Length: 269
Ligand SMILES: [Zn+2]
Image (cartoon, rainbow, N blue to C red):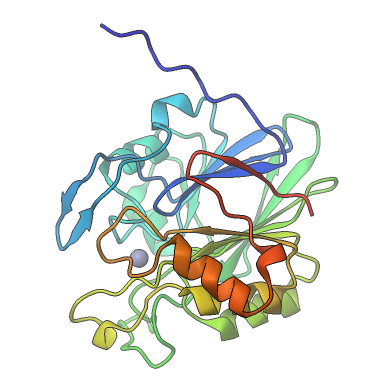
């Protein structure tokens, strides 16, 4: 038996993309994990995972909150990610997802909020925000959602950077609405990668591409923009180079915070 891997030390005020969409956010003494995916590479139904996580779920000790933008797709919520999420004390997700998942899951509709006590004594307020998981004119499901119900999240609290986690969203109009309703967001975790699924929406992207990620950064006016959801799955059609190129084309490289997965990035401007 090998010795257990060391726990990942806390790094307050920072975020780390672990792989795929999965991001760790250490804020106010809370460890938060969004869209947990920790499976090894391999097929997941119609999707194929091509890369494992930079950090295993076992190393992320004492997680206080898991955010799931949608539980419907394996690239945002794979098998070990599901087990990890259901073991957390609190899981915030869509209203439909909460019904499916049970346990620690609480459903939030867009603009609903949930307050959480922080180990440092303050309060963390999580606001669910809308997300459109495909082109604006994409086919709607019976609930009126493009692709499926998805929520993003804005995390805020006194003394903390305000952080937007987009979830799978392809709509700049939606980003603009969030920027209008919640001014002063400091950092954004943007699901990029231009995910395209065969047979769906004529293979148009269901997440931001690099150009739209740069546009989202401009619309939000966020000094720190951390792309996620651009490696690790075969249906992601843009990687780090395309994102860097798009921010450079827009003259916004100074707003881009990108590094190898498993690297801490400061959320503070
Ligand atoms: Zn999805």
